Image (tube, rainbow, N blue to C red):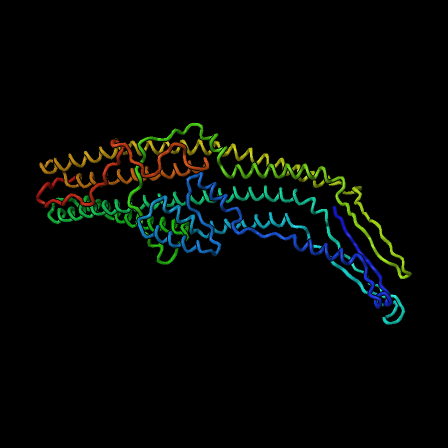
Amino acid sequence: MRTEVVARTTRTARAARTGRTGGPSAALAAALTLLLLAGCRVPREAGFPDVRRLLADRGLGRVHWRQGTPEDAAADRLVQELLGRPLTAAAAVEVALLNNPRLQATYERLGVAQADVVQAGLVRNPSLSGVIDFSRGVPPANVPVVWEFGLVQEFLDIFLLPLRKKFARAEFERVKLEVSDAVLETAAEVRTAFYTLQATLQIAELRSTVLAAAEASAELAARQHEAGNMSELDLSNEQALYAQAKVDAARAQAETVLARERLIRLLGVFGRDIDFPVAGRLPEIPRDEAPLERLETYAIQHRFDLAAERQQLAIVERALKVTRVSRVFPSIELGGDVHTEAEGYRLLGPTFRFELPIFDQGQARVARLVAEYRQARRTLEAHAIEVRSMVREARLRVLATRAVADYYRTTLVPLRERIVALGQRYYNAMLYSPYLLLQAKQNEVNAYREYIESVRDYWIARSDLERVIGGPIPGAPPPGAAPRPEAQAPPPPPSSTPSPPHPSHGETTP
């Protein structure tokens, strides 16, 4: 729908000499001036404070959008400070939110959506046209010279501005929710990568302990074989165990490198910054597990992506209503025409033009929006069902990994420690084979390694649960909270191994 104003005048050479001017020129100039003043500035923050508030409600305090401002230097200093001390899971998330380039690229979606809001509030630029007709002659002959000019502006845009801005703002809110959800996704990935790295570092240390024990056993077997107290078969078996321990230790070291690289990519660091120290041990499992009931409803209410899909559904529904109303008169142009004829007559009158909806009645546009509305509604329903299932799955994984870790802590690891202690006592009384003692020590270290893996799996499962519900678990203590005294993890096995006995001491073979 368009409203236009057109002015046209013809001036003779005599009128030009007498200084007579047409009245419409001043009005057109004034209208053009008003339109030029109808500009709007694009805000630089682009809704990022709203995103920051949404994330603060989810426990993510410091996020920064790098836009070439002085605050960028402060963010760089904070990143260096965090990387300069042993990195924790919370610090790793903070570094990623301040420094991850892909996340920074995601923030730019806010700038695009903000620009769309500003664009929706702008009146379209007017069109100025003019024609000088010399076909009848040239001055100063007494022959008319036709001057024709026109200024066209779709003034009906002024009435459509509130509606367009409402749609643009609704889309802007949807983008804010999607950006906030992307931040939560990145935070969950960082926590998973960090816990994996912590576990691989501890496991690599334990593999080194197992390697030392296997090396001691192989050396003892070699001396006993030289003394004639061990068969070739038993010696080869000990050497094979030692070789396997070397492979396992090398594999563990390689896994630490790979896990570190995955975390480095998420942190967005390079150069000397990749050599950051990491906190040595995984946080212990908290003393009490938070109530995990009613998390499905909590997730439906708190997930940003579901909120964004609900916003999209509302946008399509509103667009459908507007299209059904506006399809009757898709285009209406109103205007005025002012001109003078060569004979000196001046004509003034309104003009109008209607687009008759005979062939295109907007039925295709309506059908398309109806299909888009149904699609958005079905997508929201499907996603909600998937979220409920993911919550149940993640909750079960948290409980299962916690049960496994508790069993290792309370039963398997203490039992392996008791076997080593008893074996050492029997060995001192010359009642136990040194190979059995070394094997018991290796089993103890392996049990503790498996306990570390179960603790790692617990924290990853808990991070996944927080991701699927859209924020921290209500009532859950943060990582690192003091566990119950009886829930303390068993101390790591000593890095030293039992001293290989002299071949003449305990020569019985396993």
